[in-house]
Image (cartoon, rainbow, N blue to C red; front, top):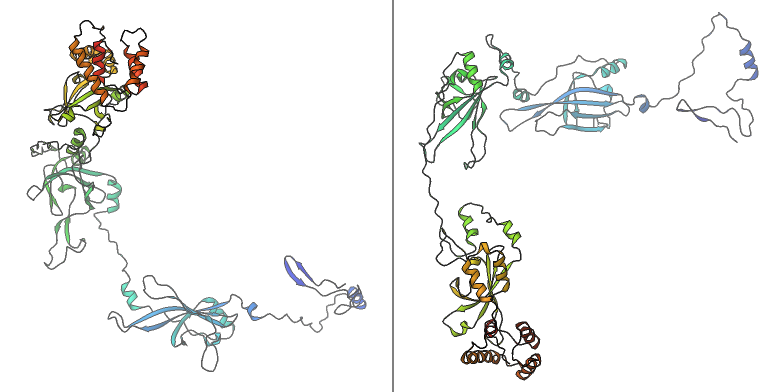
Length: 594
């Protein structure tokens, strides 16, 4: 076991001499013996003067500890030649030379000057600077005030040092030279702005004016008549006169849809000269700011009045009115009482009539008409209540094409009238082996009546669709031959909205009749049988024998008459196509052909 010799006291590490050796044996080296301890305990202080005891030698302290963070600072400058510019032949650059005592290193730093355009900062990094070619380095003994020092080909003039450097050098027995004044760069001093000198006249105080009239503004209503120039007009403006500093501002007055960009200020707030001083004609006043030296008199509140013309920056404004605060100010300050506003006569412009171009046939007329009313057209408004009430309500009619061609006369179409938006669509049921492709004939659109114009446009309505009437759809004429039973039910439930003739035509078309067997002539019956047979002959795939047997089975009483509902159900089960026109004729005749 060895005794501990390292420890901490008050947070600091320290070492102590061991008191015991290996094995716990007491050590008497560098310690007092027992006899010396007894002598010290029995010794009494005496007043006799003996030889003074020497203090123990202090411990060795290295230089990096003794001179840590101790730096010598010297103020210096050097001169730099400037060959090209004519404004300066040389340049003075001020620097600070730092000498670090802990390792005898040096550094040179140039303080940064704003807008100098030179790379400034650290000119020589910290290191031991060589003194000559013999390998010697600069020491603090080689530095003094009022001397030149050359480092890397550049000569620095040391002019002064800080107080710590002065005390340190004097403590080391070095005699310092008197300090010198720092030399400044002449070109930098030339560019330095002169100090402003404020001279306040004795009879006027701007601060008093500002404190008295702050936030008090005179408002005048004026016009600028520019009608003499091309595209000119008489435009209104508002002139503000700020009493705090005698500045004037001109603001524009905008109206809705006037076609002008919203720039609120015509002339920004500034002082306006009234009378200029005599100056040479070559004086470039257009590119320089106007100062008090060029102006004899500025515009003041006395120069503004109702009914007066004033010129600001080449524009002539006519003041025709002012606000209530301005009237009170002129009445109290200048005794003015006449504030009668001047009436401005405006030129009346003839309103150009709007001419709507003729309809070109593309799109819906109401939608195309919006392009004539607005630059950004909006879709026409829809009757939402009507659309909600009549949603999915459709009136269907059977129409025949009126055409000189025999092939087109046999074509049958289904016309659908949509009550929600008054649109019409036409569909052609496909017929096999007819040579005509069926399908959609006309998409949903509103159909105008013949003879209607863009100024007086009328569309087809349900009241115009009667049995036997003719409608013209984009140059094609259709004859209404039949209608759906829903059409009659809808019109009867809304009889007050339709003419009596339209409703009566549908009632006559759908009126149930007794079987007029006795009143039917044999010739009419034969013609009807021939028409039915011709219709059946168009369909070669039908087996007439099977059809006849089916009808005979349904006619149990052997009367030769079937109910219309049974007749249609039997045709559907046998796949027999039913022509609506022939079916109506058969039902009216009260007979059944089989």
